[in-house]
Length: 266
Image: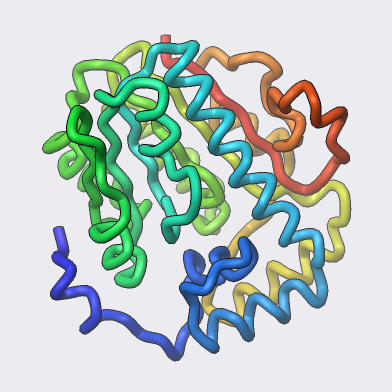
């Protein structure tokens, strides 16, 4: 595991990083010129990406609240957490139960520095950060086990991260290997971009991301549903993200190119 003192030496501000580009979409300030340039180019061809980012963030709050308040989950493994913002996973979970334990996973040194400083647990729970790549599920599980009891249910949260694994077979293998390492009664939460509402704009954004060194592959809702194979989907199933258990006062959100789901491991 890297330390904060190690992070600045690995920080390359001349190349965009997915966490910092996403931070720009969310209106954050923890990004550099290279991140902003790529983000602005993507917005130019796919302006809905800003709303997609913000709806995805709202979904995190609803999903974690469900898991902690209704499903009784007290342990969370958030892979690809990104830069801290409001209502991070541990804040939402510990509002329900202060004893919740959370491990964040990312591979950006700037995220590491911010996480160590800002993602701090209340005194009755725990919060830790693992510096690892999503393509190393065994390493993630081994590091997470220092904070989480993997013999008890854990919620695996993967928001906006699986699209960065270009090969679908590899992405499904990563999910399966992570879930195989978690106890029965654990949950999987996935949220990722789709290509059905405006496929041309999505493709243009994908090409810009690949050219900028930040590949992100938007997939079909059916492909996203495939990540939940063998698990028990929670109602309403795999749906457009703003339509997953929206607040009653929100009305029916519009369709957009981002889908999500929550499912339980039997």
